[in-house]
Length: 215
Image (cartoon, rainbow, N blue to C red; front, side):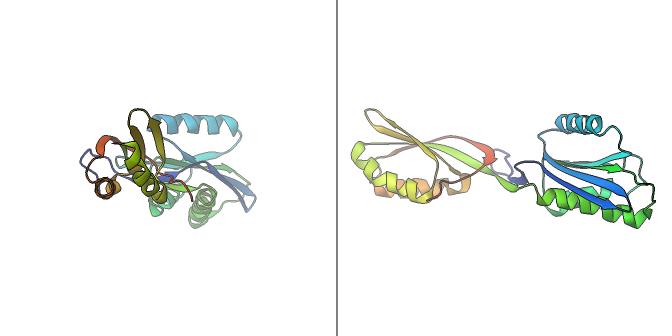
């Protein structure tokens, strides 16, 4: 569900994954690559085509936030390449991802069913080698407390694993990154710990990968 600022969490891949399969002498090279826009995806495709200039086909699918989905059979029979690649991305519910499959033709025709299976398998195996991550709506919150109150607040922040930066001045200000849906609970807990003396300010919200500190 989008929050009040229209931010919507999604899944993507942290880094590229690759695969290689050989079917009836044809080589299928799969690439699952994070992208942030259609322009970046097209630029990435151009680089792949340049690198694999001798390949017969460079088929692909992409999904971007905002409901954008594109696919191409790049000369293969209609529906035999782009659609199965897109199905892999859709099945994993991924956005901001490009998956391309380069085919070096081996001289043996695979038929419609064989092509669908080959492109789908190459895409799936590339995705298996690309780590899936959650992009969440995160909030940045500044908590200002006295030095004595900080001794009560710090263990709470540390136990939750929230990434935080601390500034020690006349008072102590802790800037915390946390999932947006946990803001109210944190504010309530800090208020209770400090008998209402803490100043709590929401600095803003953004979409990003949330990685709590491990204990």
